[in-house]
Image (cartoon, rainbow, N blue to C red; front, side):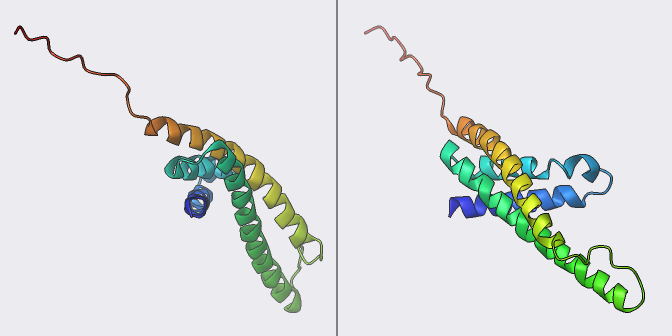
Length: 138
């Protein structure tokens, strides 16, 4: 359950990175890394879980890319019927788009998850210093 929550946080952060105007030119390509860092640090994932989280982020990106691509194809098909042009109407565009998003999101999501998991675990450690007992004369 911790990985599902972390992956949803990562996807939300990544989508926000893509939606911010002007800034999205920088934050958009780095969105899986930024999302992975935030999601993994909030979930305090281990190194092994970071790899799984990265794959989940990649799958989420593939689904998101497929849905957006399908919407673009649907609008393009509607334009083609009304006499416009439909540049994305080829059958191999959606699988290629989803596959590219899967690989891209998984690699960068894993990198971000490894960084965020290490940050989350480091912030969780309690200080180990002890306070010396007061020496009172008896």
